[in-house]
Length: 67
Image (cartoon, rainbow, N blue to C red; front, side, top):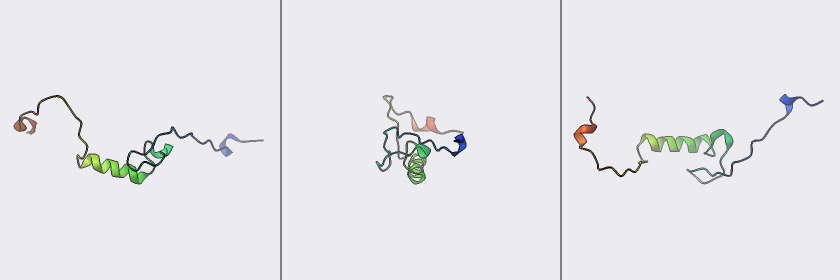
């Protein structure tokens, strides 16, 4: 008799690739292939390497400062 706890269910790969290195993504780290690639991406966000484009004109730099 089969026990459900003994059965390993593999999740299908959604067909995506890791945005950092291009390898197939792994469900545990989706959309990345590993924790390393996930950490690399996080570091890029924290260093402000990524930018979100906008159609707005840049505001006065003094307005961006918070008290």
